[in-house]
Amino acid sequence: MITLYKSSLLIIISTALMSHSLLATAGDRLLATGGVAQMEGAAGGGLTPWALISGYGTDAQVGGTVFYTQAKTNGGFELDSGGFSVGFNNRVELSISQQKFGFSNTVPSESARMNTMGAKLRLFGDAVYDQDTWLPQVSAGIQLKHNEDYDFVPKSLGAKHQSGVDFYLAATKLYLGAVFGRNLLLNGTLQATKANQFGLLGFGGDKNNHYQLQPAASVAVMLTDNLILGAEYRAKPDNLTIFKEDDAKDIFLAWFPVKNLSITAAYLDLGNIANKDNQTAWYLSGQITY
Image (cartoon, rainbow, N blue to C red):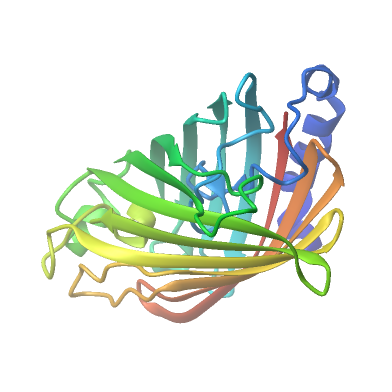
């Protein structure tokens, strides 16, 4: 594990040392109210977008996040993801990221790169401050994805498209002091997608080539004022005849040593990937938020 995370830790530490200018312009929202960086760049959990807007900016401020994530499964598949997002007035979020997926010995020395551009709009509600109502914060989002290496592995597996667009609706609510005096966060997301393995294996397939609604859910508890334990589930479509695709699950621990720096470790269960079943991974993600 030390070897696996060496490069990501160096990036996290280097970014933290360069973050003094961000600290000076930090937003005024509460700790962790922008979530962490989701693997495709949106504010949320590691697996799925939440309704929260990136950064700590209030309705009169601009905030944002820079992140890097690395994971490697027990079958040797590797995922690197990095990017940034900006939140405007706690209302609109824009994000850009790139994911790189190494195919292990399934296709030696080959990988797929996917570029993702995202936008999110908070429709109504405030996950934190609307404590006098049961209504959650609700946001609508879109992620435009382009697989740069579609013509080699994804296309040969039966994927139909190089690019795809995911649409989602997310609802998030933070309940203050709900679990033995600790804060509880609940999130539900409904996503319309054609993506194979999040888009890393292209979009659509010989089995299904139409949009499907896929649910996702997250729950997290603040164990202390700067330590969050949570779990996530994200359903995924099964579009390719050649390989079965399973849903994704994780258990994560997010640590905020200071308000503007967070490090998230997670145990991830991806099920079947290509010709390898029971793929699990440890991943580490670091982010700077302002």
